[in-house]
Image 1: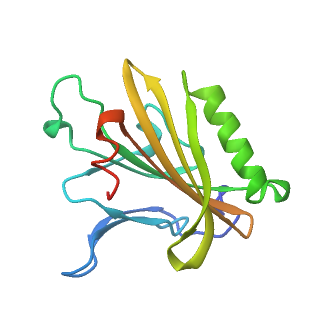
Image 2: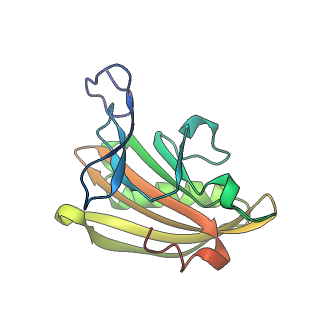
Length: 170
């Protein structure tokens, strides 16, 4: 049983990225939760438990390859998390909890926007844009999440503030 989702899952929960087809993106997939995300070409998959700043329930972590970084450049990353949500935190409650946690946890965090969006498949979700400082870097955070059947699935992308627009389509 997976403690993040409360559902039975196969053992050996992490799948390597696999090519789905010639015209499709590679995908990073977590077998325990079913979470999957497009794997940008050249990015590397990391163990989510070994990333400096991680989301609760993180199951997938992708990052820009270290060899492509210039000295003193923040390493862009994408984190996917899946976790149970108390019934009283569906949608609006979860948004308030996430935002409060972000402001308490990340140094100098500023939430610039939170808006309701319709995600792929027609799911009602939220989109947050924030900025914070870590290890001397000014970091921009773009995060999407959806709550369904008491489970929240979240995708967060962090990059240097100056790279925010360039990575919008990743």
